[in-house]
Length: 114
Length: 112
Image (cartoon, rainbow over all chains, first blue to last red; front, side, top):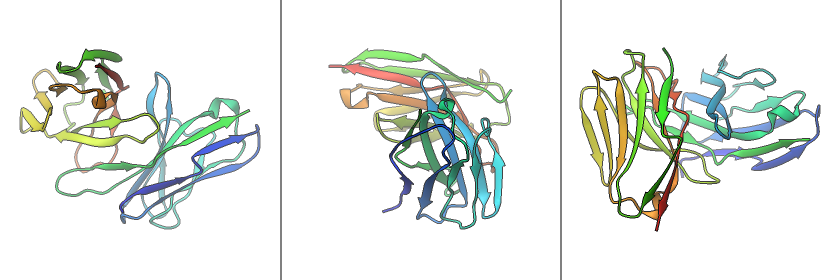
């Protein structure tokens, strides 16, 4: 089944404790991206990657890091999480086919930083 | 110029009615306009998309209407059902660019 897999689904952590949220896709998509979703603010892009070893900042990159060493994986790293990073996070991947850039999203990671 | 403005923020429609969500954009270079549907606890999923060479696209009960001169596009859900209750996002992009500019989302509730 074509999918984007995020782990973990839920995470509670303490301020300053480094964490990684993993994202993996099995569709050989070139493009991958991380979003955070907060009530009333919609989807805000954190980082994106056009291909292996190519990453770029989105709208809200502060406090986050990413890497794209393999095409299928795009982990999100919070080196020193803070309470304002409490949010619902989504990973997405996309490929251009038949004139469309259909994004496939993961099921989300709900992160709470206390 | 990069924004996509979506309205309303929330919408309540009776079962069987027509749900209408509107989006407006400024950048005339945008040439791809998708709508995404998100159920609680799930990631958004592509619902329907349109390019500016057509004024309307229909897939089942879902229709996108596109007005190039007004720089607006809208989603119409005919015969709305409780199962359509979800958050809907419009978006736009330009050229062969994967980057989507997202609207803020509309929470739709269909009352039985």
